[in-house]
Image (cartoon, rainbow, N blue to C red; front, side):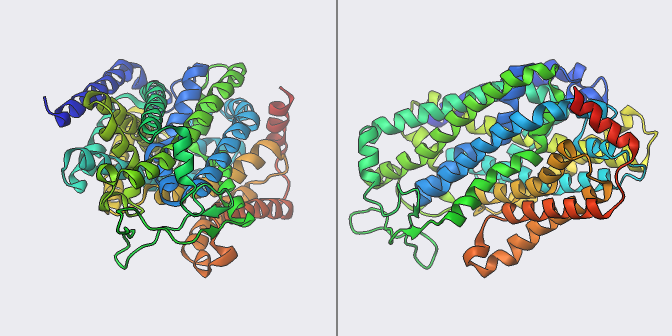
Amino acid sequence: MSSTIQILLAMIIYMAAVVIIGFAFAKKANANSENYFLGGRTLGPWVTAMSAEASDMSGWLLMGLPGVAYWYGVADASWTAIGLAIGTYLNWLIVSKRLRRYSIRANNSITLPEFFSNRFREKKKIIMTLAALFILIFFTVYAASCFVTCGKLFSTLFGASYQSMVVVGALFVLLYTLLGGFLAESASDFMQSIVMIVALVSVVVIGVVNAGGFGMVLENAKTIPGFLDFFGLATPTLGEDGIQLIDEAGKAVFGEASEYGILTICSMLAWGLGYFGMPQVLLRFMAIREEGELKRSRRIAMVWVIISLAVAVFIGITGRIIAMNNPEVLSGELLLTKASAENIFIQLSTSFLPPIIAGFVMAGILAATISSSDSYLLIAASAVAKNIYQGVAKKNASDKSVMLVSRITLLVIALVAMFLAFDEDSVIFQIVSFAWAGFGATFGPLMLFSLFWKRTTRAGAIAGMVSGAAMVFIWKLGISKLGGAFAIYELLPAFIISSIVIVVVSLLTPAPSKEIEEDFDAVVAK
């Protein structure tokens, strides 16, 4: 049996297990829209924690983050990972319990737009509509990043065209999401989180062994200017075609290390701010069966996050050293562009693991992609079906019609995301970073102020959402092009602007009604 067939067989076994989970939960999930979109608030602490992190990290954990470390060295990838770890902890610590409690108080809200709308007791559903539209926009971009992962994975493994593999991956995710809803998604995410961390640890161990040991990896990495420097950045020397140059010895060429200042560090740490507005994580807080179980979930989540992020970064470092010392194994054009560097996890797996084992490790990438893309599609569909269709357009819509609109929306989003993913030179990390900034700046400040500042007004909430989302686009597409201090990650300035706008507009508008303040006081008092 050829190695390709063995890899394919292992991945088919994995995908079959995912489909079986979908069938197992299909009946319960489709009983009503609350079960389909939030699982009836029945998640246990382990499933809550592991599914939250698996849906959060997505394929960028196994491809995007190692690719950044491979290309630039320690600094960018590590400061991003540190920011994410801090953000994860703070989100579980200060947001999870109060959101779980408040979402029930706010008329048993089962989606994020519904929570914000009910929190401010709005009659004209402006907050709900805007929130749903922003979720639709940014999750379509997010889903595209997942389809890029599928395209790169399958085209690299099986030699098929990138675009056709994007379509295959999208169809599988779409069919699975249509089948089982939130319960199936969360249950499979639990399994996939285990597959992901096992895959990461397996690849880093086999990579270090083939690189000559941990000490040898560090010793060789020191020869690349800025590669192991937390305050410097390696700079690959590129040709006119954008491909990294290779010297006569067959090794990739690097220039002098670039400076990595405190502003850039703050920019990377700002990734952690995104968690306060990340719907796929926040929904898990709302869906856990008991508020008291969130403490255990936080501990489980932090262990998983710290291990997975650290290992993902070191995979990129180890991969670069192997490529440098064993060019016949990993070198060539395949790993000499920023986009193709994200294939380092795949290359290490297929080069050093037995084919059948490599197939299950590759399933780790598929696991990460599925666990995220089904979350993105489901939440975006719920925003349209539950919040816009039933919440605004047709308030007396039946559960059956809501489910139908949801499925139609899933199809449309998947088609648009596939179109966005068709560019073979897409860089997963860059796509994810933009969508992450969008959610973090649009919903993060609003979530914090909604939970912790009683004086927040409906007008302040609307202004904060709009200004945060707008600033992400303005900064990314305009201001950042000025370079220098303006080249920081768009999430940081957009988050700050949104927070300021919420405070200013709330103070300039009439205080919330007595009923809204009573809701807040009741939640805080528990």
